[in-house]
Image (cartoon, rainbow, N blue to C red; front, side):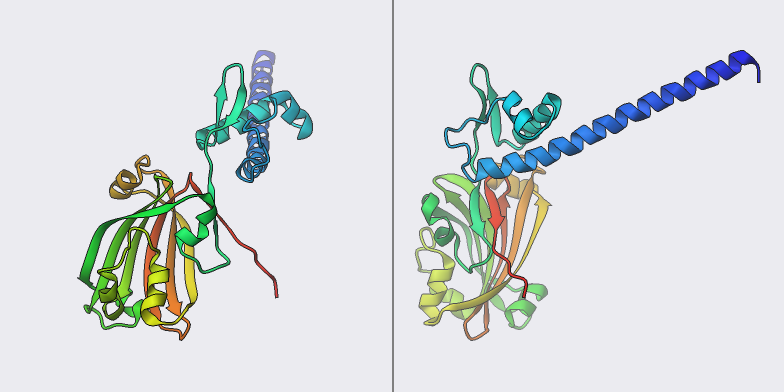
Length: 262
């Protein structure tokens, strides 16, 4: 190989190595920024920044042994989530609050969030409807049998929080037709109607993209991630009585629980 070609090839290899090293550094900084964002998110959601302001970037960099660029990138992630905002002359401040929803107790939304304000329900749809086969199977009723279908928009202190789709066996659902569903949890009403407490629930939690209808009702961006809680609730005697598909605004709710390893 001629000397000029060898020099050109060596230069090309050196440039490729430099680009690869630069990309690796960027990936490493992105990883560290994500880790720092996770730590800061937990603190701001648990009220660690009582005055509503985060420490200065230099303070965060020192406390977490991170570079200023990493700190800025972490704050950018929290800003994209709508949790913080940068105010000139003030710094980074908390602008949104997520409300805790416990997963270790069977409670209605109003019971769960009673310390954070008033939950109200806008009943958008309510009435008998033929049970689709998957619904009928889980509620232990014949397929095609009418069940009570309810769609509610639930607000906390006036802000849209969740869109709930509920299926209830009609022998119980008929008694709900005249009930105050706007101000009362279905759980409490079911216990009153049946004369027995609720027993347990099977739940599944996953993230889904908001469809056009859900996004419009929840006043969330179309395609935004929402938390989908699927819950089948049973009475104390084991009878399944309430199948729900609940879409929570992910920027306004956080799920938590206490787990034991037996």
